[in-house]
Image (tube, rainbow, N blue to C red; front, side):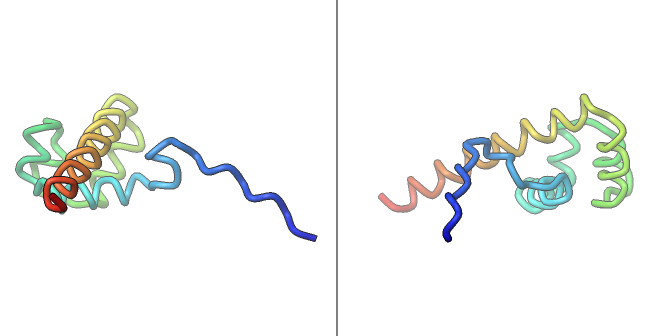
Length: 86
């Protein structure tokens, strides 16, 4: 007996951990630019993924900013990929 396949979520954040978001953002923008775009101490003073996760898990408004910037980064990467294939 086969089971019906689960419908895929259209949410681009579905299944993406906060750790993955912070790591990808730091790799894409660098800590300095990340700290400029989201001015919080965990990105500006001795930044690390661990300290960022600790802060973001307790601070909903900052986590929302990280999620928003992550979505922006995904759109930017898509645009860059589309330009590269032309």
